[in-house]
Image (cartoon, rainbow, N blue to C red):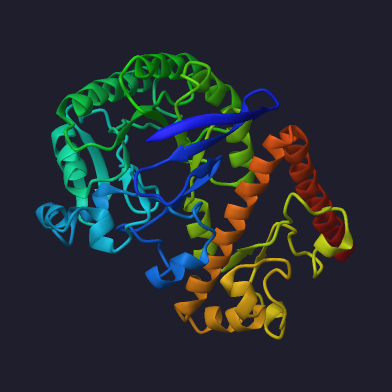
Length: 401
């Protein structure tokens, strides 16, 4: 793995170039790490993956815990690892144990020898030696070490213990590793700034290729998150990439970028798609104050729409007229509304294609804003557009009352 920072804006926001093994071309950061189930996006079939923007859609996140069922690790290894098994030689895989959709960590204080996860196979205790064996068989391009992630409501003692364990498991994973692939050192610390700093400092002393900042999305507020993120990034080497788990909303992504984060996971897209929601917020290049980007219907959000709603039953327009994704070029809101209401799986396929394409465009807009030195302006404009929408909804609600 090779990484180089190319531009800075508004203090710590930065763009960079990430090169990962077999990826055709370089991936610009800030970038989106596409969430998968056993190596493939939750709803997009392999033959439609090329419809997403390349190469920025070629970075896939996989949880080794998904492979506790099905094919054995030896079989995956004999097939040549994930890339060969899935027939995706031009894609790069990042292996992270945490999967907030299917495999959640257990927050007890009893597991001193490994991390305990609730999976589809039941509760499993994963020791560092077991985890590294999984990595060796799967051969991802980059992988994160085990982390003892805890929510904000645990005691100070438990939070401190989580940092100690995470650093201990990091050392064990590094010592056991012979699989190749770049190693990401996991960083935890809950909502305690000092523990976050201590963990980041310890991890930065180790021989790792980058960092995975974990423990977010577990109860901390938006207001306290910037201090926690900055406490970590201040301790890290600037020439190494920073991944983060648990920051998926556009506002959270902008918070992370402002703190110097490079790669974000995409569970947000999965949850939107499952709920029948389509992203519709405008791109950076457009003037969001024009009528082109005002809600089409009273009470509809400017950033996303619920295509299950009956108001779209006869709407023959695409999800977004200016979107160039496969879904918007070939299908209408009315068709997707029909698919959702008859519980046809194609609805989720088309929605995930649009939402992924749209969110990748959002990240492209962030990169362009940083290169232009206008990241703060871009961030403020996005926040204000959301407030304007809230004001419209509130006004309509007041009239209705």
